[in-house]
Image (cartoon, rainbow, N blue to C red; front, side):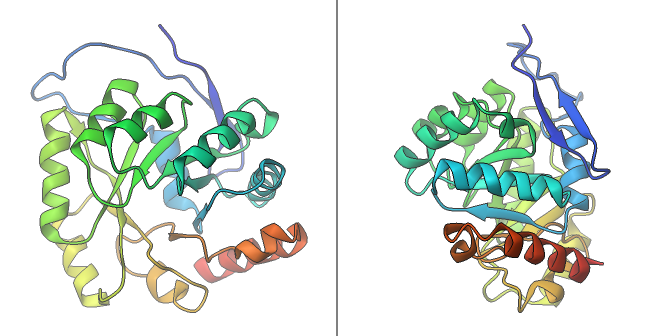
Length: 252
């Protein structure tokens, strides 16, 4: 049975339609697959940033998504802080045309109950502040991409081992928090785990964006400070789009 269709902006600015297939089949040993859709993966890797936003007015969320799509940013993560505020807002957003403008993620999922509640909305991806096997199990059952955060070499290995048990490849992870991490550390991490790219966060700001964006294996910095919440609350979307253009220039 085919799951609901979602559409999103790829790195070429075109709208891509994604069909998710539901399957109860057990993973086959030796046959790995990507939980993260290849079109979404390519869009995220090419993005200047992946903005995140705390619970906010539905109209503002929709205008933000419109601005992101206009500037060819492919995705937005809405932080479930708290979850009971995020789910009703996203349920309303997902019933509107803005649902198809960008990939929508739900973040800060730390347990099975929250992951199940988020998965019911059929977002485009799930995010957690650290790796959770229980969130992974929900993501696999729902066939929704899962982007957990890692901080150490052991964190990455734990994710690789767990994904492998489900016959899944790991291509994109969240690197969080970046506090205390050095360029040398990131180069060593990327050298040890080739084929995996990392979205740094916790916290990337305009002042340190360039130094992070141009490190090896670093893509699409994430964070709520990349587009200040104040601009969103003021509904100054001209300034929002100006900030998005600035980030694109800095990413070049």
